[in-house]
Structure formats: structure tokens, C-alpha cells
Length: 266
Image (cartoon, rainbow, N blue to C red; front, side):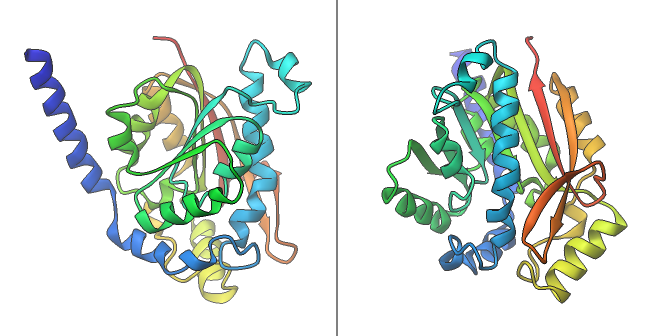
């Protein structure tokens, strides 16, 4: 009986956290271009282009942390049997290419309209993806230690409480599993390039997409993950060329960066 009471209190705490972390203004902002989500030359073209950089990064890092990595390199579906949680999946821009590598993908997002869009798009491709309208805090209450990898790509900069968000992600992750973060650093340069230039001058993304106060520095992400029993494997800078619509790796993390960490055994 005591166990049931504790579980109820824990779930109530998670629901309170969820409500606090879901920003309705953020949801409304992304609903503005729901119809253009899969337009590779529309307002989300930098995200589509980013797949050429982030998908191989996720694939290789996942394989390199596994004992069967040499066998997987030879397979046509190198991530076959790997379970991946795509947090803040949106319309499935990242979920679909990860599923094409053979992985079992669960995509979650708090926006029901965009989740419906993702489901509809996947009906045309028959990929192994399960989409759910939920937050990672809610999802973690029923899916502890479930996934081989967690991908939180271009989402944490839209979250109010980074600690609770990342802690929930880690609850979903198996020991020895990988967590990936791609996001925007909190620097003067990122404020100028990521908001003033990208939104107001070049119009690469719709105005109001980003809020500077929600950006986070890589060392702060690293600290939260390490407090959650993770070891950081690598932090890469990411640079976007708006003229060619391409991304490349860099040692400079002052604007965009990608982080990979592995959850240690308890």
C-alpha cells in the first residue's frame, strides 16, 4: 500500500513538473508553420539540412559504445534492434531517418497537431515509429530504463527547467545508453547570430522562435548530466552556412553545439 501511495505522489510531482516545463507560447509558435514542416526549403530548412550532420553522428556514436559495433558496421541497417526516444520530435524530421537505419523510434512532443502531422507523414513510409503526445516528464513515469539512446535535438532551448527536463530524459535511458543534445549556446554571439540575424535579418527561422534566456551553455548541460551519473564523451561545435544551407563540425561552440554522453552503471 505504501508503494502505491509513493507512486501516486511521484506521478503527481511529475505532472506538476510537466505543466511547469511546457510553454504554451512555444507550442503556439511552432503551430504557425505546421503545414510547412516537411518543406525542405521552407522555414525549417536548417533542421532538414542538419540531418546530414547529426544523423551520422548519432549513428556512429551509438555503434561505438556497443560491443557488437564491428558487426553492425557491415549491416545494411546498423541500428537494427536499437530503441531510441526522440524527445521533442515535432513532425518527425529526425525520427524518420533514425528509423530508416533500423532503430525502433518513439517520438514524443507536447504539441498534438504536430504529432498528428508526424503520424500522417509516417503512414506514407511505414517506418517503425511510435508517436505520442506527451512530455518527457510524463513519459519517464512509465518508461524508466527503457531506451538505448535518447535524442534531444533542438529542444532544450525551448524548455523552462533544464534540470528537470534532462533528469527525466535520463530516467528513460538504460545504463550504458547514450544521450545526445544539440542546441544553442548562451553567448553574446549566439544572441546576435541566432536571434537578431537568423530571425530578424536573414529570416532563416520565424521571428520569435528562440528566447535568449532559455539558451544554455555546454558546461552547464555537462554538469547536469554528470550529476545524473553520465560521462560526457564529446562536445562538438556546429556551424551553419546559410548561403549553401549546409552544416559542418567545428571546434567553436559559441553558437550551436552537439553533446554526447553515456549513462554509467549504478
